[in-house]
Amino acid sequence: MNLFPLLPEAFKGNKQIGVIGWGSQGPAQAQNLRDSIAQVKSDIVVKIGLRKGSKSFDEARAAGFTEESGTLGDIWETVSGSDLVLLLISDAA
Image (cartoon, rainbow, N blue to C red):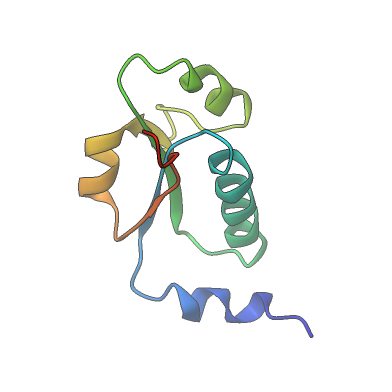
């Protein structure tokens, strides 16, 4: 059963989904969500939020998330600008 057509309805009212963290789960979850949303031609933005100075910025950029496109930024600006936030940082953090 193809459920992709239901994706826009599932996220109805959301303009930006913030993904906080780029550790063990962040890359796969964020890229899957971004690619799935693009596949159904939704204009929802998936934005990665990281700590200032995080080494993960380079990894997120390599995966196609950028400050220029509005898909990569600081944790707090990402949280405040998102309608839905996925917190994918380790329990230890």
